[in-house]
Amino acid sequence: MPARPRSRVRSLAVGLAAVTLFATTACSGGDDPADAENLSIFAAQGPDTDLATNSFSKEMEELTGYTFDWQTTTWDGTTAAEARRILLAGGDYPEVFLMVPWVDQFSQQDLLRYGQQGVLQPLNDLIDQHAPNIEQAFADYPEFEALSTAPDGKIYGLPQWNDCFHCSYQAKLWINTAWLDKLGLPMPTTTDEFFDVMTAFKTQDPNGNGQADEIPLTSSVDDLLLPYFANAFLYEPQGSATFSSTLALQDGKVTLQAAQDAYRDALAFMAEMYAAGLVDPGAFTQNRDALLAKGDSAEAPIVGAATVLHPGIFVTTGQDDGRDEAYQALAPLKGPNGVQFASYNLPSMPGATFALTNKADEDEQIAAIKMLDHMFPQDQHVRAEFGLEGKGWFKPEPGETALDESLTPFVRVPEADPNVTPPNDGWGPLAQYNSNEEFRNGQVQPADGYERKLFEASKLYEPHVPQDQVFPYWSVWVPQEESAEVAELTTNIENLVSQASAEFITGSRDVTDDGAWQSYVDELQATGLPRYLEIQQAAYDASK
Image (cartoon, rainbow, N blue to C red; front, side, top):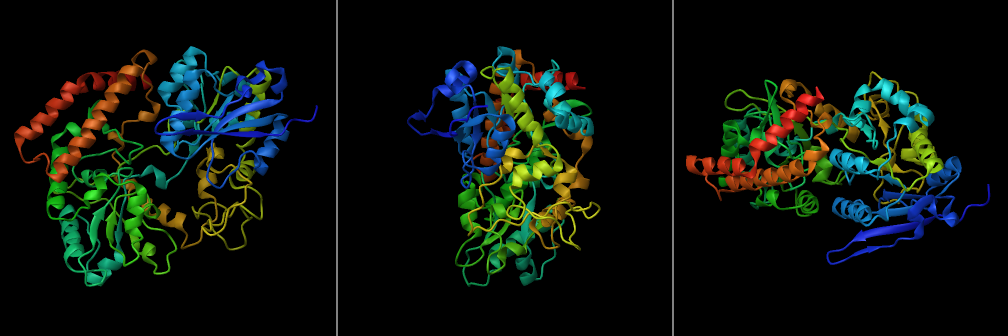
């Protein structure tokens, strides 16, 4: 094979006023003989990674026989999604899409649309003929194959299979136990007890600086304040802005929890908290950077509790004063009627992060699926995600234990040092395609490790999920002919629920006023709730 040209990298950036695409003819794949040995890949690139020079990229180039022509976007979800849409709309898209689910990926509706248009190529035959490791993963985890397969039986793209135990329970609450100890208070177990604890946090100067600067309870627009507390009144499936639907099941019937009377009761409790000054007004407007700034307040710790997936979202770990260690998970609270639920979300996101387009010829398709297949076995997955042994990961030493202590540990990945630039040797979250239970929970974790803290915390929530009420959105595919309609309905209904919920909590709408509540319910009806539930019910029934 002739020497391959040097790899190129292109950055896709979306600005407020214009979009600049640094594109070249390589996007047309094998159509140009001059680029016959190039494989164009659109990917989300982290701030400490250069995919063009990354040592794992070089290994994959050797494996496939192609030079990768990278088109990169950032880990900003808005930017990444806009860049992908523009490429597809303009027709100058790459041969391979390789994305990060929590940044951007194809939705199920995208897969049906672009698959049926012929833009995305089905992977079924490629997997059968050239991807034995992917086939084995499907056999080991039938749920993975089901998640990947459209109702017409075709696999238009592959999602990442990620058995992240702590990610399954998004709506957690972390409370400042140092403040509880300072004030001689036990962990609250009910909504009434929590109200009393927050009042003490606000009025009794638990940080000891002589100022009334404490913020009893906070969150962000990405993490959501309400779901944790709503689960003390009814099952509330929302975990974060990523999982923003309140669809649930009642005796097999799809319902919108945000339209139920018990949801109103939850809003009333939160409105009472807000009126008492116990809720940070910024929880409804601030992003995670603003939230973190409050958790890291230089004067003194000022945050009493936060509703986030993990405490590192609102307080930097490893601080000299140890403040981050004070935040511990609070089990689901019991409401006034004895309700005590926890939200559940499948940690593997439906849709696809890997997809092949019609710009790829047969040889390029085979090369790309072999690249993906290479990352599935445990040892090769370690190399792909974490980099080189002795730098990004190490073999376990005698006496070290796995995150799940019932498993034999197979790898130790050191915690990242914020003061050291990581080596450019692995693909990180781009490579998490077979993060099954053994892979995630078999990694070494010290007794005081952060992942162990999250693992143990999640055990507080796991028993409280009402399995019969969980709407399995990940396995429900809305037909292509209804996808545009349901997308619009979803956006309008979820926006209305989000806005009205915030207004009820902050007092812009009076949650105690029957007329105000009926007006909100009427708005949901007028926005298309009956039709929305009809479509979701039909899709759910079909999925069974």
